[in-house]
Length: 165
Image (tube, rainbow, N blue to C red):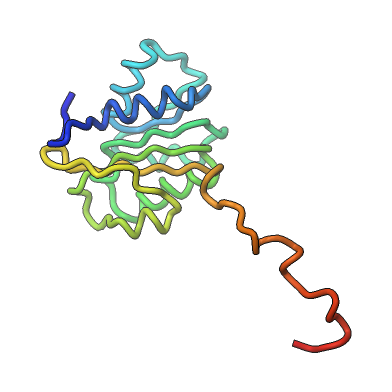
């Protein structure tokens, strides 16, 4: 298990995400995700776990059900940007409640703003020799409630039929 120069390991961090959420169903792609799940669960039941095909994971989309967690590792580095956006967008919108994504700095055409634009939060950037970044998406924390974002502040009913705006 490799660690960065600060002593952090992506495998351990992914394992702690799995242990924290205790998902009943997982969709995953990549060798690191497979190793983490094998270490955590051992032999996995087929109905609760779905592995996306390695060379082109978008061929399995859309998924037949909503999964509790998606683990995507070692994938965006090997597919084009459009296919990666399709994969992450489909997982985010219809595939999984939570997504943990480990992407290497060597991924072509992928930048921090791309992941933020898709609603991901950067959890940690692993320094050399790993040179990867761990991102996460959770629908429960994606769009927090704001005080101004409620029906009471959308209009001023006292002024209806009195003023035009």
